Amino acid sequence: MFWRSLILMIVALINIVLFTRMVWGPTGLIEYRELKQQYENLEKQIASLDADNLALSREIRLLQGDERYVKKVIRQRLHFVHDNEVLYLFGDAAKQDHNHDGKN
Image (cartoon, rainbow, N blue to C red; front, side):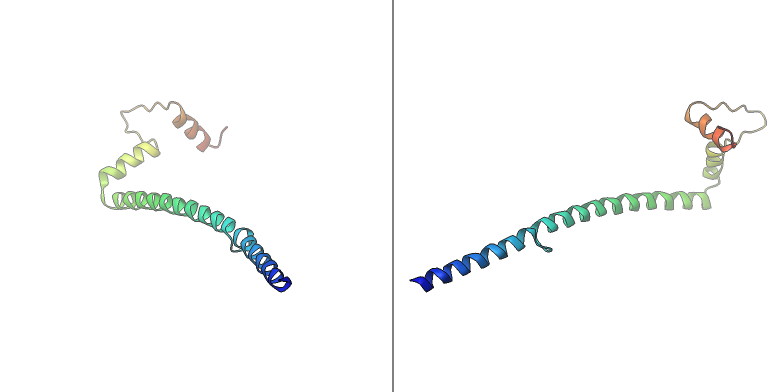
């Protein structure tokens, strides 16, 4: 009877150690959940970067092949005006233009 109890105690101790390692060990459930969360965050970042990359690719194609788009971009981003036009900048556009002049 003593040996049987001793063996059961040893088996129970081994089970406790294995369970502890399974939950809190270096390859345990807690580490798995943290890695899974990191993976999901990285997947979201990749999706966002892919969308940005696609938008930039479209813009590159338009800039290389669409003269009207090039003119539109020049007028919007560089505030290009024709001789008979007056440009008024309001809000953020005025602040950006002011900062690009080297003044603050």
